[in-house]
Image (cartoon, one colour):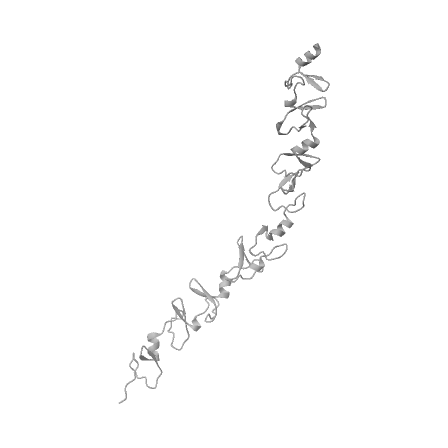
Length: 282
């Protein structure tokens, strides 16, 4: 009598029937599917031994059940993502969740290089200078209303220009007579010493350091022959087209200060009362 060859589960004979061997035990097809097949997470039916099975995050699917939640497109051989446990093809995910480039109005695909500024998004190649139309990329830029400029174009178009050298002032500088100057360009008209941060004066709209202005234009003290500028609160005495520094306004004879006192001019000299009286009695 021939040995029996039965299904390990239902004990029916497997002679002349298809079977599957599992853990050294034979099973008829129905028993194998009921015992070992996974349940499809989508349709809740068993995934038979002859069906293509897909596995994603501890869930099993028939090939035809693994599809986009929005467009019903099969995801078996397509890139996809998951949003709140719903499967989405890349197109549906981008249309629903990805940003659009404000320049070309096309989707900025996940993983592509992009720029974000003030709540808007651009493809890297779409974020360009409004003037030269070159991509700005990761370089510095300056916004002006709804337009964006690379630094070079913005300075060329909008930045003030130095009154002396005519080049743009990107930062800093000084203002003289409502005109902009580079600090290094704002110099004394005579000696070219930089005047930024220094006391200076002007003549015929030209700036001068105090020393040069005094040497060139100020009247000279009758006593010391140095310029009388009056800058810095310095006081001076004036008499008949002649000027003296206040400390220099002294008696030519005894050197006593004549500030606030009576004096007597004698030729090129000035005398106090006493010295003038002595001179008269001789």
